[in-house]
Image (cartoon, rainbow, N blue to C red; front, side, top):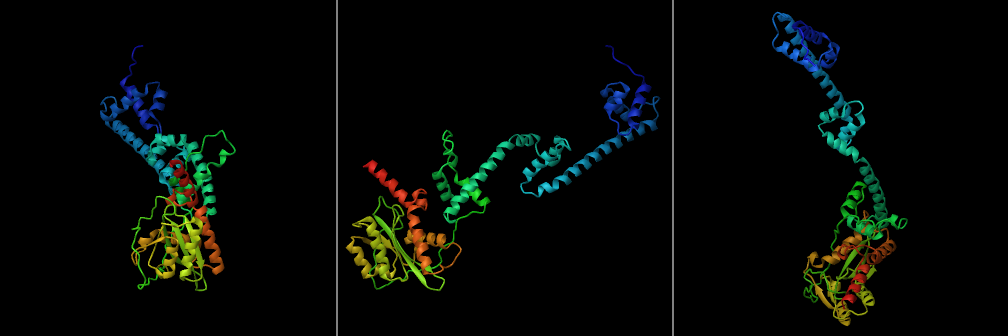
Length: 409
């Protein structure tokens, strides 16, 4: 097909028509004239930069140039107004938290009012990121549902242990309980292990946290006239087997009427088992002797075992020393005024008060005190998960360890 040629006057008139038609585009004017869009564009550019004398006068060329500049400014103004309107509508989304998520939500909500490209450009996000997020929305929704179900399970475990468990103990409990859906659907694969970081995140989101209050009162009263034993533990609160190394302490339990109850303990360093304990309204030597007697009843024999304590007068007393000799128990004592030398017993006392008293400062009365402390001490051995035991209870830890020892022997 031969190339079309146009008279110079036709070119000039075409450019003048484009310049004088308000709101017209190159496409619409070119279609109206029956010419190619690029041809009209070239004519406009040519007449704007080099107006031809003879085909149009200088004033007409200047008018064309001014009209093109006005059209350009109008397009820019329209673009700026559109950007302003978009940002105004998006402002309420930015006040809802995560700014990036809010931008994606705004694009999704207004994509029918503005082009997605324009929305992403104004909000300064990648269009591909928006489409990827939109495509993965079902997976995110499923994760939210899974988190909600897991949060409900966490709350049940947290409440079952009186709000005392932190993230790691709750995680251990959930892993032992397993997936509740497995009983209804045996063909399903085994539920994956719950990660403690996920549990910590969900607990924080739902305002769940174990108590972390520290002990504030020191009760050890040393008797300088009594015999002091060497420190045979040296802060190594471990043992290769049960019934080898024990630690003990005596702690006060405050009552609302101003009096105190006292708890004496005997703890096995191997499993953290509270082998013996005694509760009384006094701090006499008979209290710690009763705790040692209770422990001996559990173990049967203490022959060759080591008992470590602080320098309290009840532990340096002749009566307690005799009780130890009668059971062939060797005594050990840490330094005076150094709680770290009996850290295991101190940690036990702090955990008891933190988890039993919680936000209260005192027990209502002696009967309530004895009942609540007794219950907690029993649960400590049989139910409460201990970090030292790999988040098993001391009872379960000893049972598992004894099984391993039998296999080895």
